Image 1 (tube, rainbow, N blue to C red):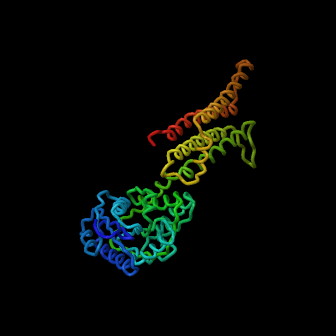
Image 2 (cartoon, rainbow, N blue to C red):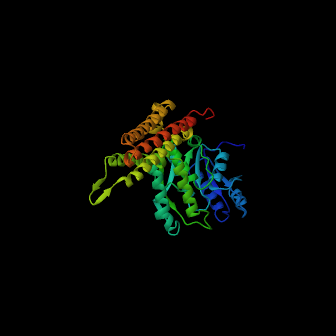
Image 3 (cartoon, rainbow, N blue to C red):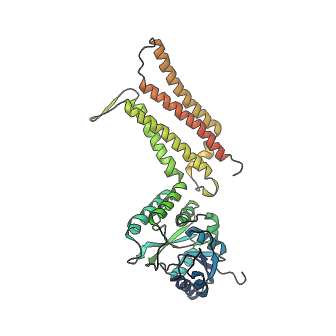
Length: 381
């Protein structure tokens, strides 16, 4: 497109927003004009059939087609078409006041790579947000994201935010649905970008919301879990492994009486299953860390650093074979004791469980080491 390159691009996804899109475009253009900013408004139309594109163009926007349906897909089309170095993203349903565009631009110029609007630090007007979203959905999902990615964010799903073009290139955003909002925050934190927040006012929308509470909430949670091997695999895996091994060893000499409770070999079966499950989860977590190297890697991730320093296929095989050999040794001792006793009645549940657990865990470590090595050494990646 000819003409001078703008400094700021305001990007709005649009799907049948005829009642509000022109008003949003006008507010954004007016805000940039008053602030002396060189800017454009890009409306990414996601298949509207109510005349929204024509209304947006008449208000001064540049409309681009976003043929793939989805909130994130519309933003991705808008980002690809935008020409500015500073990118402001906002919904076209008039729930956000685009008069605040200069505040977001100022925060980017002051050093932030990504700036999030915060409805919870600002104002939520009556009727703007359902009770379930305000007191359950948004706080819970924002809290989970903050926990998984190591930085407190008060409103991870606000639809008004901004970023630099360099930040956009580093994050390589690609999700097509509502989880785009979580992806942007998660990858910004994962890549160590400077993330700021600005209190904003959230207004009631006109028309029907495209948000589907449980479906879209699950998509946000699903995305965060798939991007977070540590809380998904490694933390529960290590907890199960430690608890299982501790219980196996504690019950190996005989039953334990704790208070009024008796713990006998029945609990050893549970402990054995926990230990086996724990190793499986740890192997899956390390494999996910290996696969997530490159663009999904966390700078300074301790697990990845540990793998780089200590893990080799040969070491994994030695550990796994040693564990399996120890298990075979325990069962060999049981067999020898039985033969020495004249092959009579045999009741060696406790050591047999320990031996079997060691054999299974050893096999898991052996094959898990091969699996991790396949992912780490794949020449195509």
